[in-house]
Amino acid sequence: MSDEHGDHGSHQQDHRQDEDYFEPAGWEERYADAATSMWSGRPNPQLVTEVSGLQPGTALDLGCGEGGDVVWLAQQGWQVTGADFSANGLARAARHAEEAGVAERTSWWQVDARTFAADGRTFDLVTTHFLHPPDGGMVDVTRRLADAVAPGGHLLVVGHSPAAHHTQLDGAKQRAMWLAEDLLPALPESFDVLVVEQRPRTVTRNDRTFEIDDSTLLARRRA
Image (cartoon, rainbow, N blue to C red; front, top):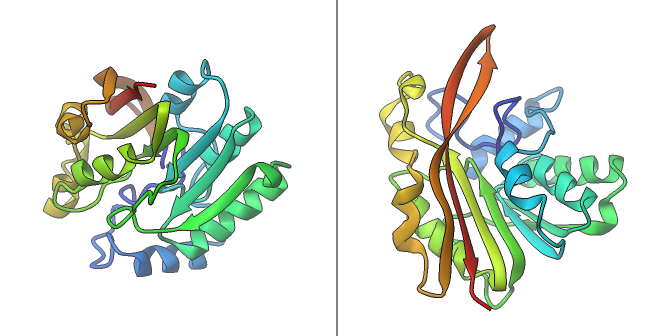
């Protein structure tokens, strides 16, 4: 959902102490008010790293924000469903897909990750980046996402770790962050874990360069 080049679509990167930070209404307002794109539009680096070698098929990006990852996946040949709880965010994402010439490879789904249900729909790739529901809710979200992975398909979940450079955030935002290993209990026995690590990455913000960890979980559902 987000990247450190502009954080396209993170529901955690805005550092304001808004009461509606975790709710759709707050993000509807943010996407409605911003004069320009909130995020960079570039794909998240762990998505590029882990997916570039996969055979394109169908994909779901939950928490897609303005659609940077959706557009990139479509450009690689995937048929992508971008999902988010913000209608305004999805409208922006659809515009970006149109501008990139990949609208025919994309579809859109307004849904809250906390109540997401696959309901029999499956995808060859299910991914989410920097989605951080409150109060440690990412384990439940990951369990819901696993249900949407087709046999032989992959699940890629990437997020912010509760590291030192996030100490300026309030308690609720700190509690929403997680380590990759925290999500392992959410995986059914039918999944093989391929990557579970805190992956270092160098970023620059406000003319300051430092290293952060991307909590990265990649698993494959056995065929």
